[in-house]
Image 1: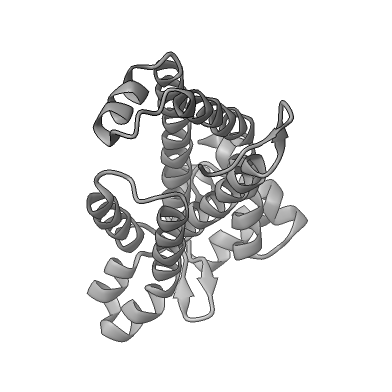
Image 2: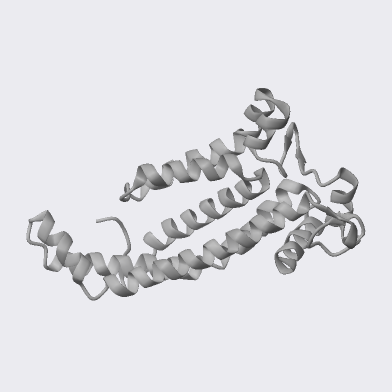
Length: 230
């Protein structure tokens, strides 16, 4: 958490705005996953080219073949590894963001995990742990705003979660509806409404960055062949 908090503090030094600092730090975190995404996309492309050579025209047989081919195991392992890394990073960011709104007497009365006397530490101490963005406090969730301040505040705090949901739906549609799409949407909606706005902003940044890397990787020549949808 100290490392993650230090990254946010460094971003705030460069760009003294809560929103900009969160986006900048989130973008740097998301870039760590870019090489894995590129490898994953190109592995998927090799798998699809391999499957086209043995396509029978029977969808069930073709699907069964693709589930047994030599590319499936490594591809699933790669996706699981990337998912584990991204989940771990998300947990670290979530705990760090929650710590921003928790003023700790043992840390000079400032937020947890942040080094004392940094610009972000001083600003959060002065604001009582709030992360204001207009009428929205990025340290709060839409659900907590509804409980504490009523429907009007909840509506204002729902703008960022709704933006996340819109981007997530576009990505699901663009890359093909996966199995369990409805369940994924429900989980994403719950996360976006129940977690602080700063964390939702992190998710938006990572989603946009990862999608951009995937699109670039699909349109970049790999071994003389453009990677694209079949």
